[in-house]
Length: 285
Image (cartoon, rainbow, N blue to C red; front, side):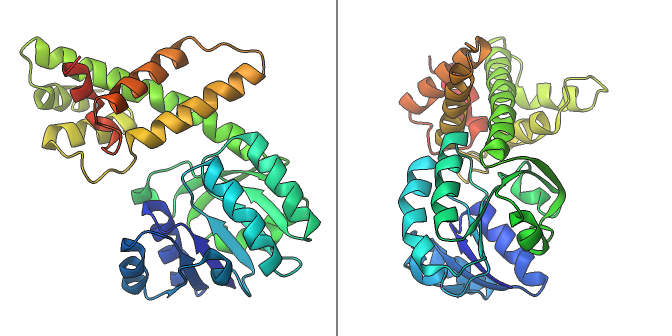
């Protein structure tokens, strides 16, 4: 299949590489200057203008920062796509955006899937994808998604995939915030965070999650400036999760605390750093 990848950041790159390895023809588009070099390194096609990248594509993969970028690009892509092609949104967005974009796509006889990724870039090939879709869209795109996902879950119509992802991101935010607070407290008490990380991860304690292992490892090696996931993106995801919950009549309590900690970290200059850096934001308060 011919596959267009719109957004060649960390996640887009590994997905493009995995799909290419399975024989798909890949053309990418991303406005960042570094994206040209990334495309060359992957030996894939590249177009500066996303509309040009999707011409002739059977499947379009979106790896974009959030709803504003999705809403801006979809109306430009649809006129360039052929009937029966499928847009797969792997970004993290709100259910309402997916519902509206799916309706636009349907007007052009284009299939829609929202399949935000559950998994880190290093786990490509083992990702889980909760899928919200228009009828029959997954059947047409599955051979591409199978290149980088181990588990695909059909959860409903457009937007339901994003519902699952935002709930997951709220939990991510809570684990990240508690890790930050714990490490800052340890440092304040005179216990080096790296030593605390070593002790906890060597144990059989129920607190040893994969996320804690990754956050703690970055803290131990003081590595924040080449982010796997930035504080700004976490802030966006948690904020969208809170908005979703409130629309459903819920008022999250822990979620509000997590959101406030994210805001404080961004105000302190940590927005573009890895989320593990938030323990430093706690120290500077």
